[in-house]
Length: 225
Image (cartoon, rainbow, N blue to C red; front, side, top):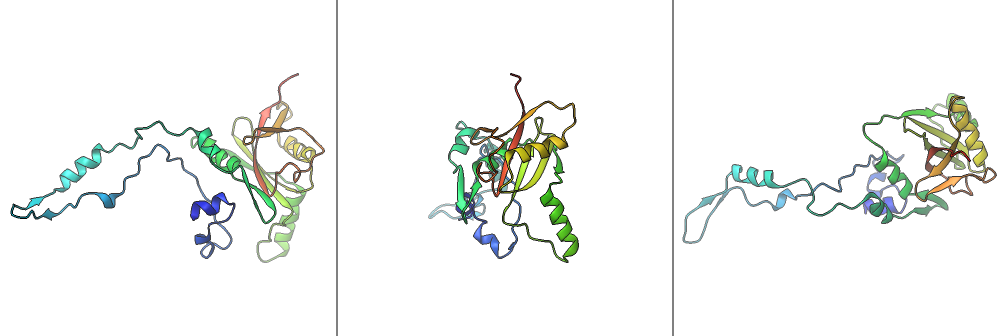
């Protein structure tokens, strides 16, 4: 049920009571790890045979068997692309499109050795939320028409967190990202990984592009014409 809820775009029902405001998940790739149910191990104590003598299974025997169990699968592991292809590309929840495949792909592609610097882009929406936070005693709720975009730069050293309105355009997104980059930085394009798409129509809104209520995107260096 836990996995089904996630694939359907819902916060797992078994955690809703304990975490009513949600909780972040960290995904680990264990496709090459063999699972062994320890409860299926042979009884480690003394056994009695009808008409025979007692036999005892020592802990040493158990440890030797465990040492022989490899953590590598004997079969060829499933490729990342094949694994992702089995996931739904997106689901619709409360009338909103939620990306499943691209978000999981991003987590799988992120190297543990690479520590990306997170940059909160100062958009009008972020400024408004900060102002409301100062006026209210509790943390203000994010408006329903605000999308949160997580955008990685070309070498994965920076992650831009961009909050914009659904009806903001791709042009607005490019402008905000450009302000965060040094003047010497090359021209860039914004793309998604699943499906592979480069966002070039500057007049399209984020809602029309399916980049709501959240999305994970990447920057690539624009090829010279």
